[in-house]
Structures are given as C-alpha cells and as structure tokens.
Image (cartoon, each protein chain N blue to C red):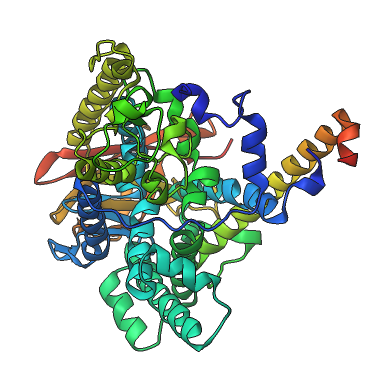
Length: 90
Length: 471
C-alpha cells in the first residue's frame, strides 16, 4: 500500500490515538511517584497549580509519544514502499 | 462461517482485500433503525443505570467528603470508605489488573457482552442516538432530511440537535472533571464564571471528545480505534457466547407471503426483510457470519424475533449461541480457560483483600537537609538535620512517639514536645540527630527512625536514613 492511499485522517488517528493512551499511563505512573510540588523543573520553583502541572505533564507526554508514533508511521511506510516499488504506480 | 479467531484479526487471508478497502474508504453514515425487544430493554436498562451512576456518583457524599473523588489537586483518592494515597499506588495497579482479568473472564464466557451493553462508547452513543431520534425522527426521516439541500427547516432541526448534543456533552465534561476535583466547589466556580484555566480546558476536552465519539465517530471507534475489539477474539473459544444467524434454518432466504408454506416454495425461514441489517449499529449483515465489527448488541436478535413472531415462525433465527451448539456438539461452561481465569481472579482478589486489610495507615518519609552535610555543635557533637514527613492515613487523630537508633549514644532533638497528626493530615517535622564523633566508625552511618502511635502500637513504621560525619 502506498502512502497516497492512506487518508490523512487515518494517519492522524494512527499517531494520536495510541500515543494518547500511552500518555495517560505514563502520566499516571510519573505523578504517582513524584509530587509536582517537589519538582523543580530546570531548577526553578513554579507557580503553576498541581492541576496545571498534571495537565502540562500529560500534554508533554502526549507530544513525546506522538512524535514516536510519527517515527513509526514514517519508517513503516517507507519500508513498505521500498519492498513493493511497483505499488507506487497504482 | 468464519471462525472467531480469524474474524477478529483484519489480516485474515480470505477477506484481506475487502477489509483493506473498507478501512481506507470514506465511512458512510449508518442510520441504525430503532429496535424494541428484550435485549433492547436490557440495553436501555444498562444505559440508564450506567449513565445515572456516572452523573450522580460525584454528587454523593460519604463521611463528610465526596464519595468518589480522585482528588488530584490534593493527591488523595477517596473511594467510599477507603482513602488512597500516592503510597498506595500498588493497590490501584492491582485493582486495574483485576478489572482487566474480569473482562477476560467475562469475554471468554459471554463474548462481547461488555461492548453491547456496558462500554461507554455504546452507552453514550445510545444516548446521542436517542436525542437524534427525538429531534430528527426515525431512520427514514433522518435519511430524507440528510438528502435534502440545506434549507430553513433543515438548518433549524440540525441546529437543535447539535445544541442538545453539545449541552449534554458539556455536562458530561463537567461531571468528568468533578471526579478529579471536588464537584460542589467546581459547580460554584462554574456558576460564578470562575473556573480555573485547566478545569476549563478539561471540561471542553472531554465534552468535545464525547460529542465527537458519540455523535460522529460512533461504530468507527469500535471498528478502528478500540484495542479491546482487536484482541478480544484471543479470549474466544468454541463455547463462547456469540450472536449468530442460523444458516441451516434460514437459507435459502427469500420473500414470501405470510400465508405461503416455505417448504413448498423451497425456502428457509429468512424472509430477507433486511431488518437485521437496518438495526445494526455497525452496519453489518449478521447473515454473513461472525464478523469483527459485531459488538454483540443483539439488536438484530430483537428485530428478527419480532419478524418471526409476525410470520408465525419460531423465534431464534438469529440468537445468542455458541459455535459448538451450532454444530450440534455439547456446550460446556467449565472449560480450562474459564477455570484458569477464575482461579487467577479469585487468587488475586484474595491476596488483594488480605494485603489491604494488613495496610498500616501511617507513612513516614525522611528527607535529609540538603544544604549542610553535618555541623559541629558547641558541645563538640556531630549534628545532622532532617525533615520528617508524617502522613496519618487513618480515620482518627493520633499522637505518635518518635525514636531513633543505629549509633550508640545517638540523641534526637525536636522543637515540638508532642507529635499529633490529624486524620488525613501531613505533618512536617524538622529534627536534629546528635552523635559523639568517637562513635562514628565510617563517614556515613545507617540510622533508623521508628514512629509508633501511642494509643495503638499496631500503627508503627520505620524508615532508614543516613547520618554523615567527618573523616
């Protein structure tokens, strides 16, 4: 299957949805172990509430896992095309 | 009939092309026809019960606090009579594992009963479908309306529907946040337009997710996004309950008059009315065999039973059955996989209950003062400074006695005469330990803090720490 055949929405969901679920797990594990009030990101004490830190933590985890998902998608697609060079013409 | 194991995986060789095609084709909107019957009533009961629980639970009180509150700002989980702290993460993890195992067990026994009756995706989709039917009318009217070009009437109807959907979704989002931050205060802040930025964000995020998933994505969530739908077939065997059409009885299908004798016409019991297809929320034809899209909601059973009644045939042309039963083999409930799942479930539950009953509702953290390693007092003793964090996770206030051991002649000095911590409270306690330099053999010695409640010696914990000296 070529890259062109896969709609953009399909690719977005394939990246955003699994990374969303993993980010929830990662956020849960991380903040079970660390209290945001005990964290000094970049050596600074923050003014942000715990709710805010949890939310930012979750969004950052989501961003990181999504980037990993984009990598997986990219390598899976290019490998697939390399194996079936003819399918590009379809 | 496709076997359940190959039906679950989209990679089944025979139907590969078909599945790939439908995966990447633009999904057509499915208009599930309203259905009445035994299973529809059961689902309505499930929907009302579960939605009721979801919206009412956060408003319930227990012992002066919200009955169910995963209080993230305060880092405490209230689950009725239990209060969990971050230290109790283990119990939460075990609870999640138990829930997972229970799902495996139920799946092996009764198939995708979770999908059809209890999954939030099903439950909210049913609620959104109900609103849609109230506003737009039945299946036929909805299809006609969608085929019309945009006019005043269509705009009014669509706007009403989306307004109701959005209002319902916003309430859902608000309730969701109410599980994580006290809902009464949240409601007061909402009414005074004083919600915090992150609370607003999560209300909108969850509300929007509800609106999108239950209003638009619907069966596509089950087909393409749900992890459970992808692996549930691994729990299936030939004795698992499935929804199935009985082809031996139904085929050859064909329409006929109510008075006609099917045997004379050479027909089976299926009158090919396609009602089973019209009511299907995932838009499949159950007569093609078990398919991975089937969420076992049994809407087709209700529809078909109704038709069979009208035709004067026996019910059950589409029915809950098992693969073995369909092949005329003996169905068995107690299979190895059921027994293994059950043994695991019971064993973990018992271990959990025992471990939980032995839980000591007292926590002690020792943090060394980071600024100085040690200092020498005017009497020539070596002094280390610590901050103790005492967590009283019990329901009662307690007074505690603190002792320390590890170095001969070690003395404990604190500013407070008594250590009293209220129920659910955290007390920070700076303490100083002093030891004679002659007793310090190595640069870093181990010391042990012990804390015990004066009125209950079962409430006792110890915590190791390091005492640093010169050398």
